Structure formats: C-alpha cells, structure tokens
Image (tube, rainbow, N blue to C red; front, side):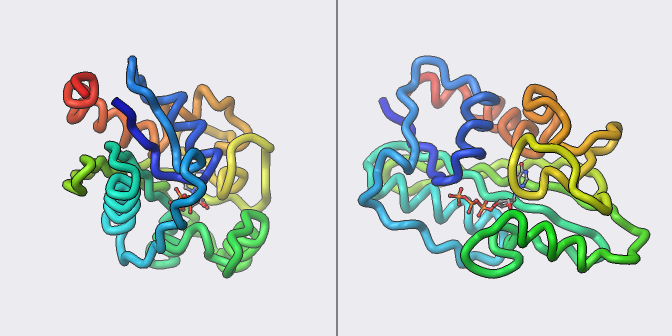
Length: 197
Ligand code: ITT
C-alpha cells in the first residue's frame, strides 16, 4: 500500500522521512504527482489547512495521505505569522524576506518568546481525516545564525539550548522539534493502522 506525504516542501519532506518510521510502507510525496495542482491553503487554522492538504491529495491519488501544516507563533505579535508563516512577507514564499520582516517587527522588543507548531493530518483514500499536533517553545534572536534547516530556523533558539535550529545538527532538531513532537503522537495514534495498510 502507498502513502503519499502531501507536501512540496523538500525540507519538510526530508525531516518527516528522517523522523517517522514508515516501516515497509511505500512512501511517495506530492513531488511524485506533478499533475496535481497545489492545494490552496485558505484555512484559518493549521488544523484546517493540514486536513485540506491530506484530503485533497488522498482523493486525487486514491492513496492514504499524510500532511503537515506548520508555522511560527510569536507571542508579542499575537501569534503571527502563524498560518501565514510561509508567505509572511508576501508571494512568492521567500525565507530571507520572511526573516527580515520578522526581525523588523521585533525590532526593540524585549519579549521574544515564540513557538513552532505543526499539525499532522492523516486521510484515508475516501477523505476521512484525523489530526495530531506538536509544538516547540523557544525565542527569536536578533540576528540570523546558522545554515542548517529552512525557514525561520536561523532566528529560532529552542528552550534549553543556546544554538538556533539552523546551528543545531539535524539529528538534534529532529529529536526536539514541533514536527518531531507531532510525529511521535502520530506514531502512537496511527502506527498500528499504518503498519496494517
Ligand atoms: P507544503 O504546504 O507543501 O507542505 P509549505 O512550505 O507551504 O509546504 P506550510 O504552509 O505548512 O508549508 O508553511 C510552513 C512554513 O512555516 C514554512 O514555509 C516555514 O516558513 C515555516 N516553518 C514550518 N516548519 C518550520 C521549521 O521546522 N523550521 C523553520 N521554519 C518552519
């Protein structure tokens, strides 16, 4: 049986494959289905967008699908960029422009607390979906540090560390991240079901 990871974000895909033990499942991604149009992410929550991505890809492929909707919530910005994390500085998605905008918005601000959040949705081929979520608390620093990872990683220092996600080894990020925490729950809740596919 095939499972499709409903993402066209290569970094996310790499992290999901590194974190989650898919055992003998044949795992594909949205990159394997170039004819399927991008899912329009117009939900107001990570849950809505994750479910929409998983359900649309499951129905279009006839496979089970797993989607990740994620982003950064900054307390002093009222939870922004939140669901708009990918396109915070406008279209098209640009990580440098998003990071510059975040630094601008937080200029002179002493409260730098934030968290990454991920919602993982799993849909069956008919479009019946469930979700789990995970987060990772930390703070936003005042300059970019490190070259690993993607997105806001060079600005985010997880609680308990002095390095940013972009300075930490991928093995460490994949042990403590929002995505790791969500996927641990996914494994606990859906592991047996997925193993039986
Ligand atoms: P798909 O919808 O195809 O999965 P996407 O990049 O559009 O790809 P999202 O809509 O979930 O995915 O947006 C997630 C954005 O949140 C992403 O582009 C980054 O800016 C940010 N983000 C999520 N997880 C992150 C992480 O682990 N490290 C750094 N930034 C992250």
